[in-house]
Amino acid sequence: MAEPIDLSPYRTLLRREESYAIHALIYASENPGAAAARIAGDLKIPPAFLAKVLRRLAQVGYVENRQGRTGGVTLIVDPTNVSLLDVIETMSGPLIVDTCQTKTRCATQERKGYCRLNVTWVNASLAIREVLAGVRLAHLIDPPRAGTRSSAGVGPHSAGRVNADA
Image 1 (cartoon, rainbow, N blue to C red):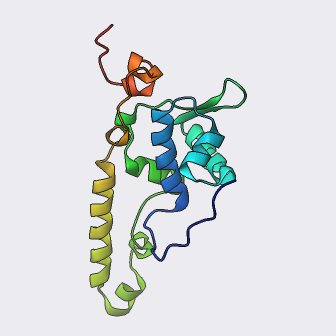
Image 2 (cartoon, rainbow, N blue to C red; image 1 turned 45 degrees about the vertical axis):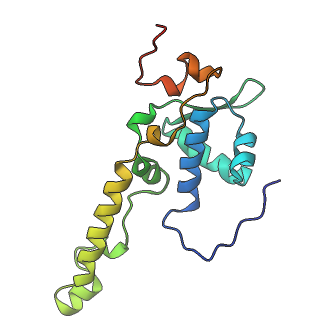
Image 3 (cartoon, rainbow, N blue to C red; image 1 turned 90 degrees about the vertical axis):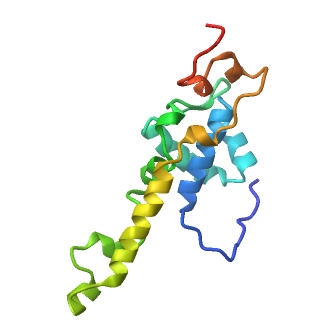
């Protein structure tokens, strides 16, 4: 059974499904074929919530999630081609700081004719997007250890790498 949700005094920028998706993708890459239940337990994610996240990740072609004895979760996308921003926007849509950015004229602009705050939100959104777009999943994945399936040049860790044994 999953542990109770930690009631932190902090407000996070990411939604739970976004954070869980990123962690699940890293885990699936480092542990190809791991059962969803094992991922949920190790990452302390409620299993039903992880199932929802994995369904979405499978729909967009990031993972394969097979049921049964020979099943498990496997990263099927090249992690060098997926940024944190890609994952976040896959789970929840375009990332912006405030919804006033989506309007031609926010309430303050309509009232005063200008809005200094809107420029701040746009600049903050652009900066956050740039940072998240610059971090690839491959940057976050631990290299395979000797003796593991991925270290033999098989699986997602070998994507984009040359196998010296080939």
